[in-house]
Length: 294
Image 1 (cartoon, rainbow, N blue to C red):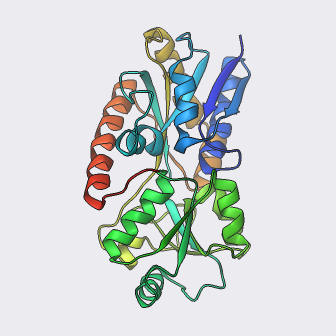
Image 2: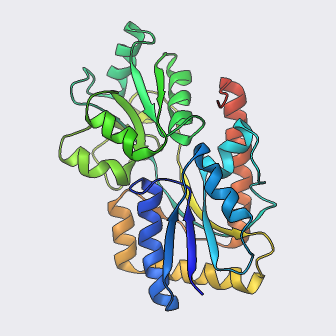
């Protein structure tokens, strides 16, 4: 049978890139082809629902992520439970977002962007990959902690949002390092800071937003692997071993690190606990800043 990994994001986004790197190596190890199935819409809810309803035979997997398993349940009614409807396999990687702007915007740092936004309340626009997605929540947390106002421009996926930021139609975007790094290096985008407390391995000279502008600011997306509930535990254990082995391969680790993603394998129980803790954390943030999904 064919393995299918459902990616609840458009092709070319950060989650998609990381999924393809790990799936390719796992497929080699298991002597199986793992097909990446991109299913976008509703902030990732559509793809995750398909996975939740799939047969629990180990041949359909999906990515757990901050957006789908920690944000959406607090933002909207979702047709799945992030814990009860899945068997956790492992955390895959953590990957901070990077705050990028179009080079024409008069801001060379996060502090300068905040100053500019305070001078022009509501005039500066920021893009996201959809209402209720992690890029929007990251920006809303930034707005709240910086005490500024920026106008949200939602897209249906990451690639068109990124394209419009590079085209100068929307000047600000919080996005994954993997999808923005080539454009930062080519100076099609200007990076102002990363959203983790520590600097990114891929951008070691770029300060974090916390160290340069907003002390304590942290919004770190993560990517994990889950299977439908009731998938047999021996299958989960094998998938966990195969993923850990794939992430230990130097070439795989180098590819991920070069993209700003830090491999973070662990046990199925540890990943389930992490999902639960992130669900609680972001639920509180959403309640505190009053964000509502459309």
